[in-house]
Image 1: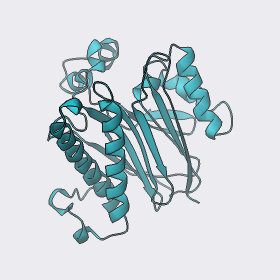
Image 2: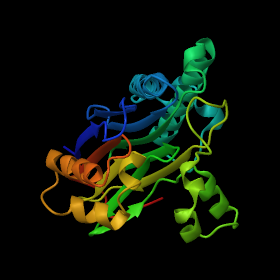
Image 3: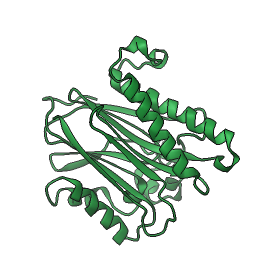
Image 4: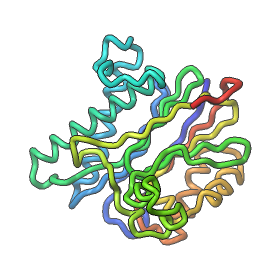
Length: 262
């Protein structure tokens, strides 16, 4: 077994509905964490619809060759087939959620973030849209490998704001890209060779809004990694007020290559 994965979700202390969801499919190596948004039940619909679409698309073509799937037009040669496939699945989910929101007035404006990872042949493909995050924990260090699609981070990228200013800005709560709201989305894609002992952590902003990266690392490394780790993180988020739904997935890698690539 190349990896083990666990995930969990909690409504938090202030929400009426849990609009987060997750998927762990060890057969295809696909793990997803999503955070829906929208009025009434729209956020829950958006996140689950996106999850189902990504899972079905990726599962359908994960064993295929490039010519058999509609990715060739935007294929990025710097990344593997599986990374391009995951990206294409997310673009498909954006289309499906957007069309659903346009068909039903009650679902108008709904959307969802997504953090997705696919592991195969000791390669981890990481993709995100929005502010749900992916971290790599290696050698007792934690590194964010996703990119927050927020107005604050966009300002940092443009040189108009420092990372420290962005962390204190209200703009960090305003998403600049999300599934299902616009026909064009920003998709951040990364690819790494795994090493034995690597830990990937994926989460919605219900966790990162109340815990710093170093606190997340300390909590993860307290005891042996497993489903109890998920529960400890969720409990800490709730002790700190639980202002939002919180969803966490952990991937423990048992085998990998000797070097990392990006």
